[in-house]
Each structure stands twice: as C-alpha cells, then as structure tokens.
Length: 146
Image (cartoon, rainbow, N blue to C red):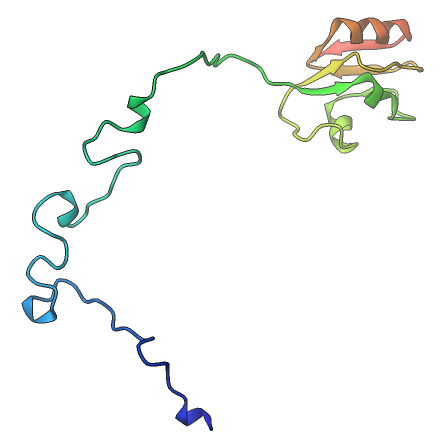
C-alpha cells in the first residue's frame, strides 16, 4: 500500500448539488425550491420569530409583570469585606476594583452593613445602607456619596 493507491470509501463522496442549471441537472425548473412563495425567490431572509403566518410565540403568550427601566443595579460590598482591606484609609470604587471586591468599574457601588469595622476609614460609594452608615460613623469613619 502506498499513497497513490488510497481511495475514498465507496459512497462517501457526494457531488455538490448545483441548482438553477435547468432540467438536465436533475433538479428541474424550480431548482428544488417548490412553486411560488417567499422561499422560492432569491433574496429571501426569514425574520426572527416568523412562523410562516402562524401567530408567533411572542404574540401568543400573555404579557406578565412590570419592567422598571429606571431601576439602578448596584454592586454590593459589605463592611466585613472592607475590614479585610488593611493599610488603606481612603477607599473608593477604584480601590475596591483593584482589590477584586467589585467586578465592573462603571456599575455603581452600594455598601451594606453586614460585618463590623474595627478601624477608622474614609469611604466613598454611590449608596450606603442605614446600618452601614451607622457602623462606619460609630468607628469614627467618614462617608461620602458619589
């Protein structure tokens, strides 16, 4: 056996279907597209959700609930996480991002009051819970809302 005698397995290689080449091609005058209708014409593109004239799924199902487009999603940081940051007195979203406590720079940050602070810090964030605010001020810390 050498490379010049290798052959494909019988029936494994099919010829490409060349449509639109007339009756002699074996695919007839309609080129396997059937008669009339959008799919038989050139340039046809199906729209997302189109179900051939049947009422589409997004119109069959009822609308539910309410979506508040003005809702603000915060990244939350707890006081117990802030207590882990040592040797930094001024904490802001940039510091939190560098320490890996928040994932995105552009999403606002909210500080929550789970945990305790044992030192004085100055923290700036977009929002604070009441308990977090009280605990920071009890530890002689300062807060600033961005």
